Length: 161
Image 1 (cartoon, helix red, strand yellow):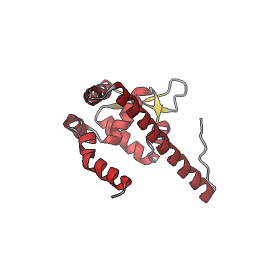
Image 2 (cartoon, rainbow, N blue to C red; image 1 turned 180 degrees about the vertical axis):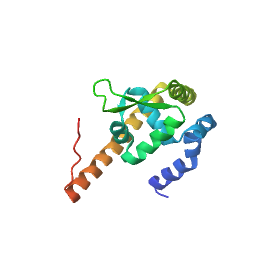
Image 3 (tube, rainbow, N blue to C red; image 1 turned 60 degrees about the horizontal axis):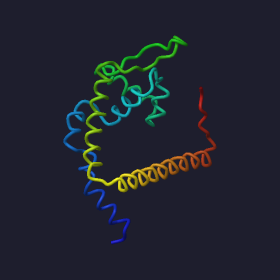
Image 4 (cartoon, helix red, strand yellow; image 1 turned 30 degrees about the vertical axis):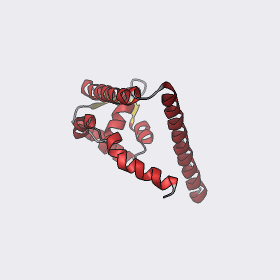
């Protein structure tokens, strides 16, 4: 078995331990992972527009709107109006939404602290360097794919402020 296949087998055998620990089950029942990513983004950036949110989490506008409708119904998010331009609808976390995010961060912090406690300082630094390298590679891949779409279609994505 080549090293790449061996690594893939190891990762798939252990993904459940990493991505589906018991600590996440309660949260999993309340919101989907996509909804959680949206809530995390809203907790970092107040008064987010639907366009910003859709682009950030990589969803079409119609899907992001449906996602927000569910979170509004669950009273985790509320829609409001921009103070600068009353025509613009903004998304704001409610107290319940912020509580859910805070709980998730607490659970994740405890989970990762448990993992990091068994690592030496050198292993921790190595893990961080490897993670950064992996994320850079994934970012490069996405940018390369977007470039290829532009070359094939001639259609460029234009950012509108």
